[in-house]
Amino acid sequence: MGNGIATGSTDIAALGARAMAMLDTLGAISDAPDNLTRLYLSPAHRRAAHQVRDWMEAAGCEAHIDAAGNVVGRYGPAEGPVLYCGSHIDTVIDAGRFDGSLGVVAAILAVEALAGEGRVLPFAIEILAFGDEENVRFPTSLSSTQAIAGGYDPRWLDVVDGDGVSLAQALREFGGDPDAVTGLARDPAQALGYLELHIEQGPVLERADLPVGVVTAIAAAWRADCVLRGQAGHAGTVPMGLRRDALSGAAEMIAAIEGIGAQHEGGVATVGRIAAVPGAVNVIPGEVRFSIDARAPGDAMLATMLAEIDAACKSIAERRGLAFTQAPFMRAPATPMAEPLQQAFAAAAHAIAGDAPLIPSGAGHDAVAMARLCPVGMLFVRCAGGISHNPAESITQADAGCAVAVLIEAIRRIAADQAAARG
Ligand code: GLV
Ligand code: MN
Ligand code: MN
Image (tube, rainbow, N blue to C red; front, side, top):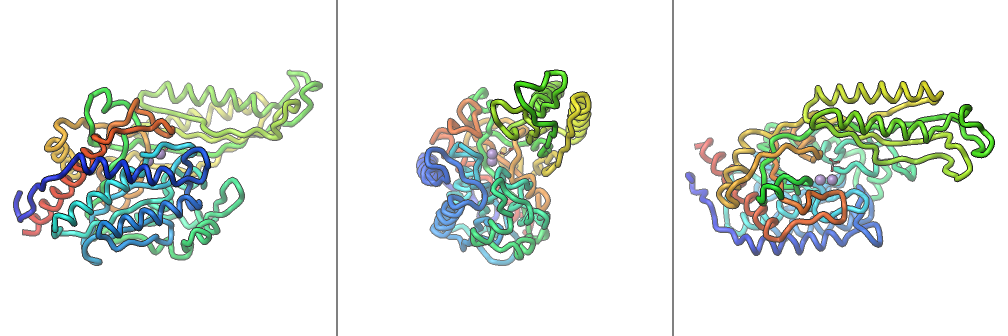
């Protein structure tokens, strides 16, 4: 390569061992006593953020936890062009250790390796450990990532969690600053790109017997909270034909939603959360709240699915005499990965891992929000059985080492291209 930026040697086995040790440390930081649950702005999120900040500093970064709860580590000059790299450290409930955390650990190890080579890069690297990717605690849409990307919706500060705590209040308790969140937005003119390494969360790489793949695009996604109201009544006295049972209505809707997901090639639709009120064995349920998560490879297909879901739910509610409302709280367009970043990952992967297939992502990622700021690129890592959002999530140490080495090599190649472009 030209401009003095050459492909360096990388100890892949050592990188894998370091990555797994760091992931073990992070995986032990949980709000739950017997599983990994680390929701946005929780005590465990704060402990994990402090750990990540310490690692960033040890790797050679200036690091801090920002007003939105993101951990930010900057390597290189404080001004000028920046290459962003990272993922998230919040988790789902009863999570695996790798979703999100792998991308943060990989970015730290990459910076440590590049710093150790004494390399002067033609840009700064900012490592970002986002806090609100899973959107499990609050009905937001990648809020802390959008703070960096410039798409923060100030109304998010007023939304509340299941205990009635507002996001603004949770931010203050965490040590953040609701008034400063919108000021975190980065300058697009200085943002060269965002790289994210993530477990695949699907079976393609395992079937192909390959450690890494290059992401082509992220599916369009939509989420809503629904309320279905009927009439509570005595389970022993109200004849079946005279009931307005909200839970039976919801059961019918769930089956319809599942069917709509299945009818669209590449589409998926899930009801993952449901609660019935009053929730007693001898009371006809008067009210049900449930969530909908629908995704599709393209925006047009998702729009069709949502229209079908809306029509199906309304017709079921009308037939059963139920009142149905849905409050959408998240909509993300299909997000293509930037060609040059796909090429950097592909070339690096071919140099280090041999073949690397091109894979679309059905899961959402911080890259969706970061695409508002700059070109984005993602690398997937093989995970056992394609299992994710599950404590059984697993990757091998060898694959972790290989993936981090590919990330380092991709950054070297982007640096070479940047240096060449500037003559
Ligand atoms: C994030 O993990 C998602 O739900 O896609
Ligand atoms: Mn993730
Ligand atoms: Mn996830």
